[in-house]
Image (cartoon, rainbow, N blue to C red; front, side, top):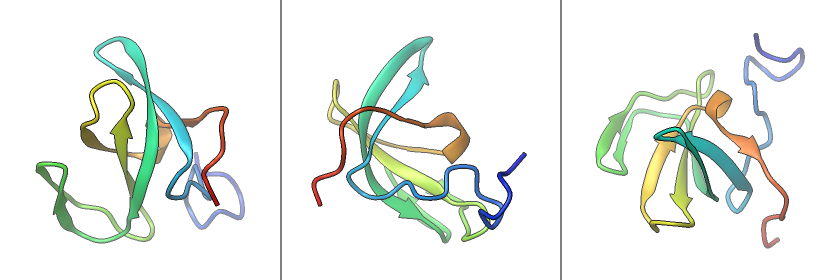
Length: 84
């Protein structure tokens, strides 16, 4: 369920440069948010059907250097802040 006051988003506030972790093949992977996707587009090798009500995030893996797209409920913010 989405948090109250977030416009339906679970992770309102993830932005470019945020450090995040996610599960990949049963192991935790870390990386950095490259961008919030809020419209339909082709990125990271696939078609992404995102919207402002259902955003997705393009992230770059620290380990592989490759980009992937994840829904906000699969990402958790980790220590380390973006470079503002």
